Amino acid sequence: MSDWTDPDAFASALDRAETREKGHYFERFAVGETIEHEPGLALDRPGNERWMGQTLNHDPAYWRTDTARERDFPEPPIHPDYLLACVMGATVEDLSEKGGYFLGRTDLRFHEPVLPGTEIRARSTVESTATSNSRPDYGIVTWQTAGYDAETDSVLVSYERTNMVPRRTATAADGGQVTDDEQTAEEGASTRTLPDTLIAPDGPHFEDFRAALDRVGDDPDAAVAYRHERGRTMDDQLVAGLPLATLNTARQHHNRDAMADSPSGDIVAYGDVTRSVALAHARSDEATYRERAYHDESFHDFVTLGDTIYGFTRVLEADPDPGPPRAGEVTFEHVAFDQDRRPVYSGRRTALVDSRHPDQ
Ligand SMILES: CC(C)(COP(=O)(O)OP(=O)(O)OC[C@H]1O[C@@H](n2cnc3c(N)ncnc32)[C@H](O)[C@@H]1OP(=O)(O)O)[C@@H](O)C(=O)NCCC(=O)NCCSC(=O)C[C@H](O)C(=O)O
Image (tube, rainbow, N blue to C red; front, side, top):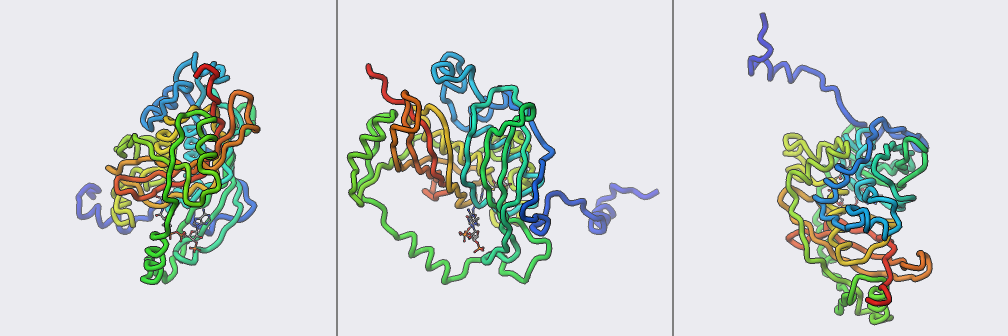
């Protein structure tokens, strides 16, 4: 009788066996097609608290009932970063499990607060497809995705995301190597100057951001921009644990064997974890009332186990009008960077920030 566990015989059988593949190549995506994603999950308090605790999102409104009510929530809601990561996680099997880079996301909007117990579903529509000029083995696909309440069908979060997706038929490509000319151009770009004078707001409230912007005025050599002190080292819990808890099946985050020969050489953090950590650092220095929207989010470089993520914030605008009387709208640009000062994420965020209380 054959011994299927004889190591040599088994290794040779593996070479002959077909692999039942997961995920889809670029050619599968047709513009206009809508995909209803099968995975869905119930957003509960323990999952929410695990995400928030690990990413340092410790805003008490998401943990304490009394603070939640002060912030006009009926109870501590699901954190927007966790909601977003779960919606995107549920789409990965259909859209990006095959691998390829998460290039960016824009027009991300949170439509309404979400309470624990909500069961979510996701659907995506293919917006555009193109072959990549710089990496001919890949295509670039943009999807419009909505995360919605399975019971009421109301949209909770929506965004447009772009990934590189491997092509089924690899071309005679250079594998994405950057040429010497491109390298020189990149180095030249990195010497571009930023404003000399960087000022920080005096406090966390809307008036503090507005006053800091007024101080900068029209001076092209000044900006409201500051660092956040906290950092978070990426451990196994963040790199593999959190994405799996959102049903994100991308091998980049949990299969070291498959990633050993990839450009990163190891598993990499889910972009939504990296982003959530940097945003948590920023939020810890502001009196956030509500998260509203994000634009032009990009993931610039790999984050691997042992990297430490810090946050940097630039304040772009402070508008008193669009919010409720207690808050004004502030637009930030946030940058996540690592221990070597390498930017790994950037995005523009619009949030409502509480006004200073009259006796503060
Ligand atoms: C991704 C990178 C390797 C890109 O590096 P670089 O080559 O320097 O970037 P380019 O700017 O030249 O862009 C390459 C091509 O992609 C197009 N592009 C770039 N951004 C966008 C965008 N937002 N929308 C549309 N198209 C975009 C450019 O036009 C170029 O096109 P072409 O010239 O035709 O080729 C590098 O940035 C990198 O390594 N980033 C890290 C990526 C990463 O680690 N991401 C987060 C973790 S992975 C993850 O979370 C996966 C997730 O689970 C999932 O499933 O998606």
